[in-house]
Image (cartoon, rainbow, N blue to C red; front, side, top):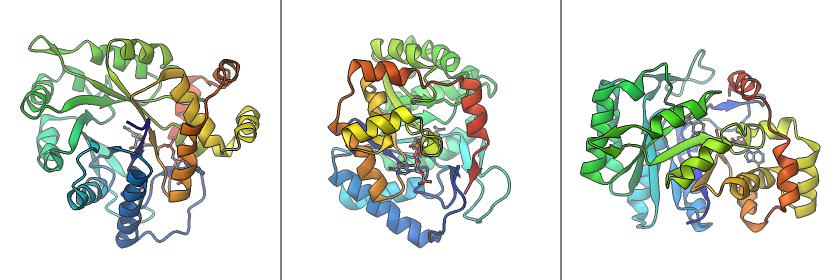
Length: 308
Ligand SMILES: NC(=O)c1ccc[n+]([C@@H]2O[C@H](COP(=O)([O-])OP(=O)(O)OC[C@H]3O[C@@H](n4cnc5c(N)ncnc54)[C@H](OP(=O)(O)O)[C@@H]3O)[C@@H](O)[C@H]2O)c1
């Protein structure tokens, strides 16, 4: 399967975290739907088979389901999540958090009812942004329900992580067993040239046979704002954009199951996919490893990104 997948975080709703000033694109639901359906088809035509969405990505699940139902492709792998609700409701300039977290059994039951309609193309079901504070990894009702979904549907169960404690959460989650069986098969994690703190944990999980899905591969676009000269030099050398170098760094260092592209346009997606046409030398990888920043700084900066 192509190592790059497509995430719908920026495709399913009109505003998403970004370092840029507000853009002048058409933010109507019709325009977003047209773009999302076209992006899904372009991605498929370019070889992408893994698609990641969530209830909190606005219409992300609905657009993905509509496209899958209309194409009836048998080789796609759809992934979704539960635990966040989209509350901005397409109100442009919505003040406050656009998505609200709730890791309760009630939220799981409510959101699963919609997500399960994506079966049988749905292959991965994840806790959206598991944290130690939310108590979700100790919530036996939730864990048992996930185990039941896994047993009844054959889905892979996963979780996603964010923040400076990703490794601790991954470690803890990977040890959870229900009925003597490990519950989690898939871990969706932030790992990129600027945030490399999970490298060892991810390498260990891969060795244990877990599937690793990487998100925020170009650091939500932040690498374009403060581009380290090394990225520019390598982009020139390989005649690609810095995004392709950043995504290739992830593939070459980790060999994860898939790296998600967060592209909003066909041009961005085509640029991102150029990562598949090059291979970095060992010395280039060593140099890129020096770009890692302190996780606390990385996550503080990410928190400061605006929704636009
Ligand atoms: N589980 C979670 O909590 C979680 C969190 C985040 C993401 N995710 C998943 O991971 C996917 C990818 O993550 P992401 O979108 O947050 O991060 P990302 O891939 O690191 O960043 C995507 C952004 O980078 C910019 N970009 C990408 N390619 C570009 C290019 N060639 N030229 C210029 N700008 C470019 C775009 O910004 P502009 O649109 O501003 O141009 C784009 O929106 C999401 O869609 C979602 O499925 C999950």
